Picture 1 (cartoon, rainbow, N blue to C red):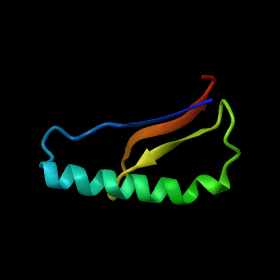
Picture 2 (picture 1 turned 45 degrees about the horizontal axis):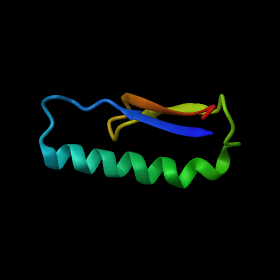
Picture 3 (picture 1 turned 60 degrees about the vertical axis):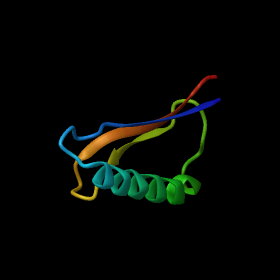
Picture 4 (picture 1 turned 180 degrees about the horizontal axis):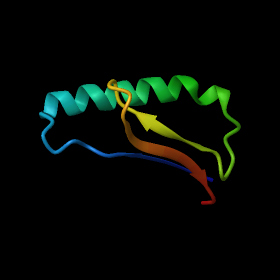
Length: 62
């Protein structure tokens, strides 16, 4: 199985803002993974601190 996380970066974001948002996304979703059955086909949208969808994660076949 493969776990795929895709996050789109705002081109106007400073490196510090990008790092802060990515840290938040990783922390939030890593903490919630226990609520999901991790198998191919499972996935969810990923949101930034402004509640805008910025990507997604999903489990796929390897």
